[in-house]
Amino acid sequence: MPAPLPEPARAEPAINAEDPRLPDTSRPLVARLLVLVADIEARTQDDALMVSALTEVRQLRDRHLPLLITSYAEIPASHRAEIFRTTGHSASYNLNQGIEKMIARLETLSRSLAQEDIDSFSDNLRFIDHRYGSDDPLR
Image 1 (tube, helix red, strand yellow):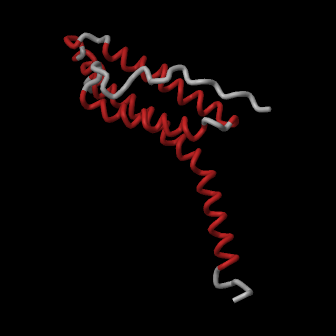
Image 2 (tube, one colour; image 1 turned 180 degrees about the horizontal axis):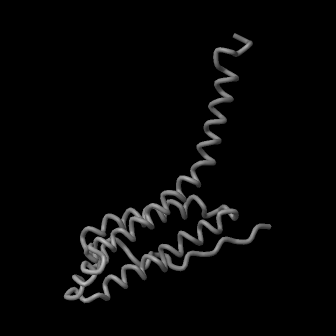
């Protein structure tokens, strides 16, 4: 019997798109990230072979995203300009870049999960075409 999948650490994510610590430009990115997490969680929930993907997604949602946002929020607003002097970009820009990297990882993971379904659908189309297409010997 396959090992049970780990349970989610929380019923609700630690961070949501309306978190008051987020700049307005980050809110749609966090919303997108959380939708991707929920989608991947739903698609991998009952598949014991997807434990590592599920673990990564939950770790991103429950640990990495909150730490990134907390570290951003802990910079006093009066000192955020120092981030610009160091990196050439504002603190909020750097925050958004970090969130976008997480989104890119989730999108890659989502595409990988979908590939098996895409391949299966393509195989079924080829079968239907072969079986019922113009080459059907019973026509």
